Amino acid sequence: MGAAGATIVLTSRNAAKGEKSVADVQSYVASKGVQDAKVFSLVLDLDDLESTKAFPESYKKLGLGEINVLMNNAGVMAIPDRQLTKDGYERTFQSNHLGHFVLTAGLFPFLSRSKTTIVNVSSEAYQFTGGSFDLDNLNGEKKYGAWSSYGLSKLANIFFTQELQRRADESGDSSWLTAVTLHPGAVATDLGRNIAGEKKWDQIKNNGASPVEMFFLNALSKFTLTVEQGASTQVFLAAGANGSLQKAAFYEDMKVMNLPSFAVDTAKAKQLWEVSESLGGVDFKLSSKKVTAEPMASLSKDESTTSS
Image (cartoon, rainbow, N blue to C red; front, side, top):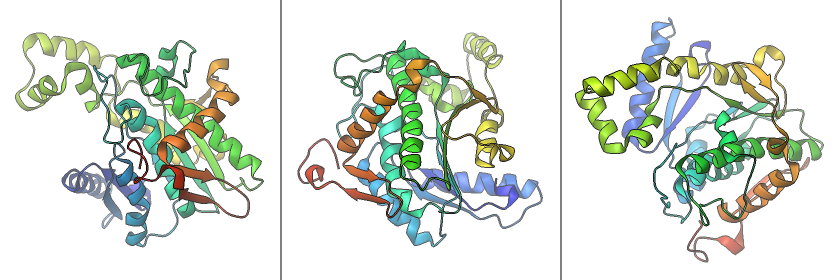
């Protein structure tokens, strides 16, 4: 996108990582013959709702104007034990869904009313739920599983996409907004650190793998995509899908895929939206006359130990 002239704002948990990412993107774009690419970085920690709610103001200070594409791509995978964020929520659920919900609510006033695409990165791992979406177990209150909780968060991405589009359509002013979701494929990223363990993953990255570890990594590589390959569908959607972008659709390998009935449950999607507003402490309303994303007085930081 940068090579095509887009202005890009990257996010990271700390400034150092963000600066490195900017340098990497600028170097890549320069290799394509484009100089002085407009690439920026801002700190954003989705595991901290205070940070998430502060982000829109940080974006505003950049003075870049309207947003045409919002890519909700951050996430964690297969955390072996139940971990809570500083807000008191299960980390997989907050990193993969709740943080994105709150971020989207905060950035909504900045979205271009001419044309905006919101891309929520999901995964075929939504099937790990076995068709069940327990609204009383979003934070692993009753039962936590590394993969089942990951699957729940990915199904939440799908529900969020569908309900966002439904509400936009219902407002009567949705011609400018298209929300889509996708399965990027099994991509060889650092998400694997949660499977190997943080310490072991860092050892492999810094010191190399043992012969046995290398054998399994090579075997795994036969079934995984490179980062560039994994990003292809996201870039395709961000660029407009060759003019055929389908609202609320689930994509894989740049094609619309059919979802099972449990993944198009409008009642569950609506309930998740309402729960997300409550847990996130935002009132995310869409209307043809006014879009608001204001903090909920009943769940302000001073009044709740589990939200901000």
